[in-house]
Image (cartoon, rainbow, N blue to C red; front, side):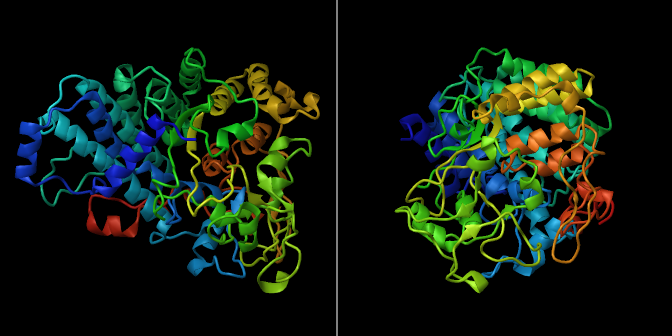
Length: 546
């Protein structure tokens, strides 16, 4: 059961939603400002609630129900997941097919939603920083630490902007004149800004790792975000920063704050996962406090077929949709528990053990058996594709789940350090860390958990190439530098909304084919700046290729 402190965190985030603190406009009510200044003497608890206004945008930015969040964009543009057309729809004007085929446009929602939600979070942070610095919200005790947390949080919103768009405006003020149009910064300038904001403010953040810092940027979440920036530094700036990445990972590893790998990976993703010792930074969800479609965690609705309602006694019938690309599933070792634990496959049953049947198309009335086959992105039946099952689907779940989303976890720290070691000539040291992550997943055959430095230097086992009802080609993956390590990232972090970023770093995203996707230009490593933003701001230059 969710703890009292945890529920207070959720309520704080949702109070900010309900009271309109997501607004992108500045406060203009002078009377309200006077009341705040004259009558409000905030306590440390009040300051924590005010900071909550800055966090709320991470929920829809990462996995909001209006679909084209970071999660879907990173996953269905990759070689891991796909949303094929289904008998009950999921074409949506070809939107998901365009993402799979890397043919998105300047008007597609994956650009506009990520852009708008990230800047919404930035505006919320800027507003509260302005209110604190100007004295509209009077505070003395805890003021500097609160501003530092908000600045690191603001930097976290610039992280996806840097990752997806590259050249974006940096806005750090809330009290802007009417008609203000920001200047565009280069990707390197955005990268440098993020790194400086984190490093300058990190010492003022809490060094605790407990429920008082859960879902917030403490020092350890900040170190992890820095490690992410340094891991991708070559992509973002053209200059590697592997040693700095290792340094930030070591800060977490040597923190003594209780971060460990869970004995069972599944424990990180259960409904009541807020006490996981592996989670470094999570986005909190709760079916009671985050029920609206914009903020609900609906992955169970988006992947299972309607008949699976009786498997979990859901309050509503699932919608079908997203599934695994068969080529990705074929990369798993049969003894890897992550293959069986994280993917829903085979004959489906109700909660009382009755075999389920399909309800539409050619499989209507036929056994509902999820198979590792898929005709292509342009059409499929109910049975096609293994379904997402990494997060626990509790019995009786509503349209929104209560599982928190672990944006940063300790396994990622170990694997970031391992990758940096591998790329700096320390393959054997990297192998020790990769083996550590693998060990919990091969209980039936422990010897398979051990990986060597030599193996990590090999190519990928992924059999790339077109693989659909129109074409079948074989490109293989042995030519991918450190491809085996890329495979390890896929096996460990599947369904966590990150695959695109990893493929870009390993040079695969725009060079290989899979399912119905063929390479469609190296410029596709970046999304286009939304057309509406370019049209209203002459200071913006569209990304190359768009």
